[in-house]
Length: 113
Length: 108
Image (cartoon, rainbow over all chains, first blue to last red; front, top):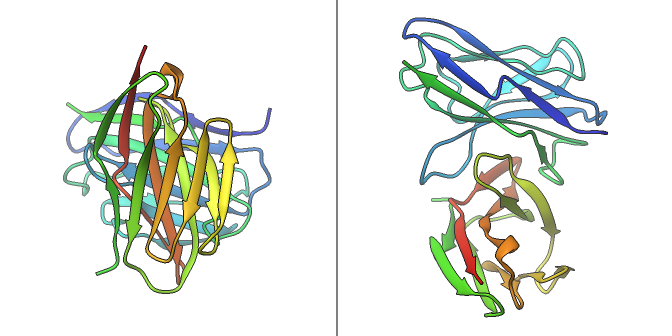
């Protein structure tokens, strides 16, 4: 089945550690995105990529890094510089970068302990 | 300031009690408005895309409409399985903004 796979579903991180969230899609979509969702707030864009080997910062990129070495993969690293990393992280993809028909993965819960 | 506002924040309905969710926006150069359904602990599921005022889309008990300043998601005769958070998002000048959602609960 085509879709977006995020892993792990749940992740606990100690303060000062970097963690990487995986996102893989087999939809042959060019564009991929990472969003953060906090209670009572709308989804906020962290990074997006419209094509392999290229990505742009979103509204809240500080403390995060990404790579796009393959069309199918867009991993997100939450670095120790991110001061409030506990959140629900959503990866998404779309055919183009026009906001239309963005499909989301199931999300990853990150908790700092 | 460009923003997307959804109302109400939460809505409780009896099964079969029709109602509407609102998504109002203050952006210029709208290129698309999207509705999503999100179940707890899951990623949003795409429902509809609307491009221009007057456009309508339907899917089962849901109908989305669009005017120049807002969109409505009408739910006709809802069932308990329609319980979820409904998100809208607005795409304009290469930006996509999400609202905070309406949490819908439908009781039997």
